[in-house]
Image 1 (cartoon, rainbow, N blue to C red):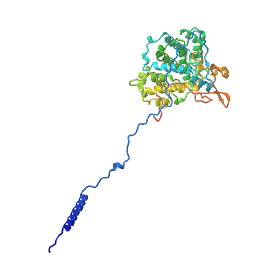
Image 2: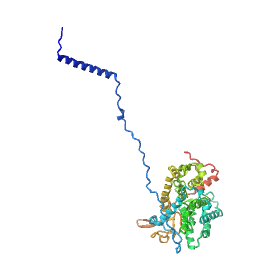
Image 3: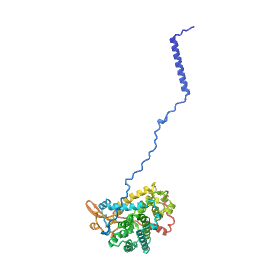
Amino acid sequence: MYFTLTCTSLHFINISVAETIEFHSGNMATQHSPPTIPNLRDKLPKLEPRRKRAPPSNPLPLPETPALPSPPDTSSHSFQVPTRRILSTRDHELFLSSSTYNLIIAFVFGLSESVLDAPVSAVKDDDCSHAVKSILGILDEAEALVQATPPEDAEGSRFGNKIFRNFLDKAKAASPSWHQKLGLTSPGAISEVETYLNHSFGNRSRIDYGSGHELNFIVWLLCLYQLQILKKADFKALVLRVFIRYLELMRTIQSTYYLEPAGSHGVWGLDDYQFLPFLFGASQLLHHPFITPLAIHQELTLEEFGNDFMYLGQVSFVNSTKTVKGLRWHSPMLDDISSAKSWTKVEGGMRRMFVAEVLRKLPVMQHFLFGSLVPAVEGMSTEAEAGISNKEDEAEGGQIIVEHNGVKHVHNLNSWGDCCGIKVPSAIAAAQAAKKGGAGETLRRIPFD
C-alpha cells in the first residue's frame, strides 16, 4: 500500500520529531548532570569585623601646669603666723577658685616636670646650691633628734607612741636656728615659715601622718621660694635630693614612733602615708625605654632601680611594711595602676589624683595653713570668728563648721567624710611585731595566690 504525503503532513512530522528529540535529550541531560548545590552564602549571617571600642574617656580633665608667678616683693612685707582658714565648705570653694590654689598647683607640677626622665643619680653634690645643702643639713639634724629621742616600750601597741611629742618639741626648739642657717633674720619671717616645717612631721595630738603633712613640707619649700632663698634652678635638686631626704626622714619617724596613717582608706588607698613620690616618680619614668608600669611586680627591678626612681622605691617600701605578700592583696590600687599601658597614663592619673584627693578633699584641706606668703582669700573664715580651737590643741579628727537648715554646728571630720574618726593602727608596727615574733623572714601568703 502506498501513502501519499503532502507538504502539510511532512511539516507536522518534522515538528513532532524535533520536539521528541528535544524532550529525550532534555531527559538525558537531567538524568546525567549532577544535582545543583544550593548557594548557602545568602543564608549565612553577614559577618563583619568587630569594631574596636574607643577607650572610655576620663570625665576629669588633665590638670595643666599654671604659670608660676614671680616671688613677691618682701622689702616691706608684713609676715603673719599661718592659721587654718578652710573652716567650712564655702571656705573650701573660695580656695579652689583662688590664686593661691593656682600657686600651689604651679609649684607642685613645676617640681614634677623638673625631674622628667631624670634618675636620682642625675643630681650630684656639685649641682646643689648653698640653700639646698643647708636644707639637707636641717633634715640630717632632725633625724639626729629622732635618734636622741627613742620611743618608750609600748608593750606591743600598734598605735602612735607618745614620745613622738617629745621629738616635736625638740624640733620646734631647734627650728629658729635652722632657719637662720637659711639666711632668715626677721623673727616674723621665721615664725611664719617654720610653722610649715614643724607641721610636716605629723600631728602632735593624734600622733598621725598623711598627705596633708607631706603637703606642708612642699609649702615650706614654696615659702622659701617666695622669699627668693630657693630659685627655679633648684627645682630638680629639691625633688631628687631634698624631697627624697625628707622621705627617708619620715620613714625613720614612722617606724620609730609608729605614726598612725591620717585618714587611711586601708587597702583601698594609694599609700598609708605618702602621695607625691608616685607623682614625681611617674614623671621620672615617663619615657623610660624598658621599665614599664608592670615592672612594680618584679622584685629584681625594684631592687636594682628602686634607689634611682622614686615610684619603684616607694612600692618597695610599701611591700616591706606589709605582712602579706602581693600588691594585689595589700595595695590593690597600685596593682590596678600597674596595668596602664604607659607612664604617660600613670603620670596623668597622678596629676588628677593630687587635685581630686588632696586639694579638693575637704578633710585634708581643713588642716591647711594660710599666712602672708601663701595667703587666704578675702571672705574666708578665721579660727577666732568660728570659735574653733587652735590647730596645736586640735581634738581628734579635726573640726569644721557645717550648716544644716540655716543652723551652724561643728563636726569632727575624718577623710571618709564622717563625723567620728576611727583610729587606724600603724602597718609598720604590725610588720615589726611580726618580725619580732619570728614571722618576718617570709611574708604570709594568701591561700588564693
